[in-house]
Image 1 (cartoon, rainbow, N blue to C red):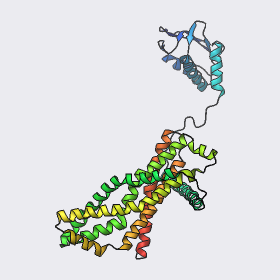
Image 2 (spheres, one colour; image 1 turned 90 degrees about the vertical axis):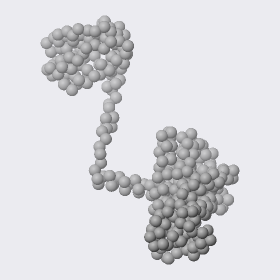
Image 3 (cartoon, one colour; image 1 turned 180 degrees about the vertical axis):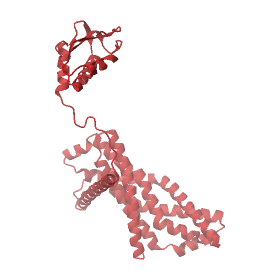
Image 4 (tube, rainbow, N blue to C red; image 1 turned 120 degrees about the vertical axis):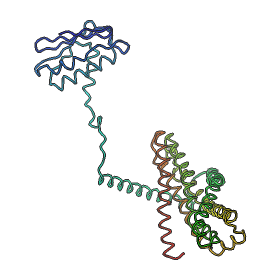
Length: 380
């Protein structure tokens, strides 16, 4: 039984008793024409298990990976049927490559199939992820605390120029976005509160609603979220890029603690500037509420300020500043932690940046809930 060859790669299939002889001739290269070999798989399937397969390559001109691909596919098909394959008729180079290919066993996970975990498995995986995150965060907090203690002892080493640069980046350069967001949040609070208060003719209480909402919660919360997306992500990207470039390893080689040199100035700068940004956000939010109350509901500026003084006290401002300071610590630690854990590729830097923002916002919301419950129970 002979199959008609096409120009380029030529294949002849000869079946004699229990022997299958494959004659290869011509040019078996990528640029040559492909032969019609669809019948070969059918012929192999019809062979008895006692049959043997051999090759003839006397008229083979040249070859490349195309020939090896064809031979491995044919050998695999024969192995599935339990047929014996003789490689003696192949060129010595082809025999050596085939022996090398089949000498290395396939990895067990080479053809790993993705499986969708069940509900309980998903819950367990999420719980383990939260546990690992908590453990790594607590460990990193311990390292940062030791670094702060070394700073008080005069043994922490970092450049003062870096510290003041970080102060500028998370302070003055953050004012435009904090101004915009806080102003809009104050206006939104005023509109939402006025919609309900106008039902009772009590629009004058817009000042108290906006003031309390901004100084106790929204000013600190929005500042923390803004800095998580702006500064926390920047910290993760900066330190992650240094991990890719092996600069962190170079610091360790020179005997410099990376936590002292990279993490400590960033944490100190953000913790120092967060209370200032919080106060500024409170002022901008109250200003936004005042614009709505004065322009839309006919409240005079003196009436607005008088009502504001009635409802907003120093304790409210102190609670908001304390919350924002805690948020600053969490944002800085989350960004630096993800940067220090970053892998050695550009994709890892992107993942570290995303993870830093998600981690920081999650910690901000969770800690705010805890602090709100505590202050409410203590009547602060």
